[in-house]
Image (cartoon, rainbow, N blue to C red; front, top):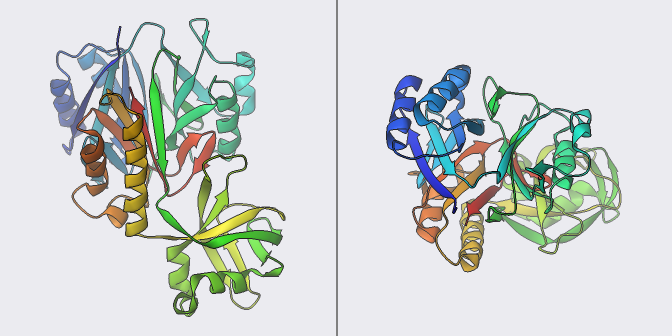
Length: 371
């Protein structure tokens, strides 16, 4: 049996109307797994929404979360009510829901590997609660228990409840779906930052505070890299210039993007959005629309070159800081995907952190294609 996918979405302001519209779109599709992404404005009603969709579609197993924005094929819905569903009809015993993992002890019953009907799990799509301080560690522990060590997904984003779905509505940890090797996937990650002037050695720091880079005051190096114009307006620089932390062992020059969160001109210090240690390296990069569009195209071209046929379905997890602010209005970010790869069933959400491999990223887009 070959996997089949169908997508439905609605921007109805009332959740009952949104569910009815999605159910009507999916009428006649027989599936066994559904991904549900709901505007955080619908978060209080998520249990009722899930129950209504399960009843209307006959789909038994569900995974998903809430977001400040949600994604559909060629469409994005930001800061307004919306539901997006990706329904899948998958071969028997080719997937399993991941129970909520809130701490390491929750993994003790799984030994070294997750299994699906006696076979090892190969890959996972996961959703995490940004309030859980152990999230980075949990991601790595879950990834280690798959054959490929590879996960994709995102952290819930919400002004109220950071609800997830793993069979039923839950919160507080990491949840999602594991897939066997029978389900073919390819993934891509786009950063949207243009690196500036080389790497720098962290020679002195305290937690997330950079004291010295290359044995010089950290702010001296920062001002030299960004240039005289931006150095005269450090408030503006902190909004445009980001830090890239190279990923050890990556064969693709990968790095995690983190913001500059504070600048101390008197003591020549920088504070960034992640703890570091002396001996680590970093780079600075400019985040703007041109860099985002260029890198998005590069990712999509790379995925297209790996496809023998159009994708059967897909999931897209993009940062809250992307969307209109980088790509412009009228769902430009999502339309880039359709223009490059065609109009295939796609769902996703705008996240408070994006997941690729076993790592938590920021300011990125992560695209998963079922092939």
